[in-house]
Length: 316
Image (cartoon, rainbow, N blue to C red):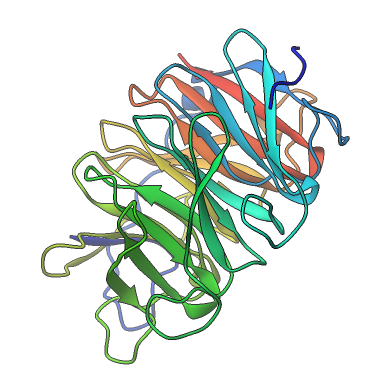
């Protein structure tokens, strides 16, 4: 609908049984100055171009932005030219939402949305026309309970953060169940309310394991190995890791909703607060949630949820 213009890696707390490694020195303050706010998108409201506690964000190959406008129960698409489109609306029938949260777009323009309170994922074509529903409420394998985020791998399979079931589930783009990670006793990967998931170009999964206050990197196709990057004093402790994104170089970007900041966890081990209120110059964050980054790592989008807006940032 057209509208208006306008391996396995933990980062975070170290369990008592994990052997400690010396903390890394914090990066120099000038690292923070590489980030520039290019554009502030949206404000509070229910018209197109306005948001009400948005959560998820995605960007397609053409540079169009997709936002899960959670409390308005819809998805909005904003083109680089400033055209705004919306679809959805409150409801439990196909094509409508109850608190949409995660969002992803494939190379053909198909849009995938986690419909959180309806305990499903919905797939739409590039025009916003409903195509397919995936999942149903429950705890057995292939069912969903409070799905919060999703990511597409290189084969266009979906990885869904099934938060209340404390697991990830993989489905094909046509809705066929493929695999489950976590959620069962004895599983080599254990999560506690995972809220965010991203897939790297190498097939690695990055998961915000929120109640464990960490980010987990999982190789879903091989054996599990463990390494800890963040430790006390390293500057990467997290209170409520939420959204996660990864660029083509393997740098990981994580929103910490409670601490009101975004962290960059570098592939080379360098980790620091990329965006925080002390450096925002009057544009303070208020529960940042979804994060998206272009493959080159130059453009980043952060959903500033309780300020009802999206920040478009440029890394310089």
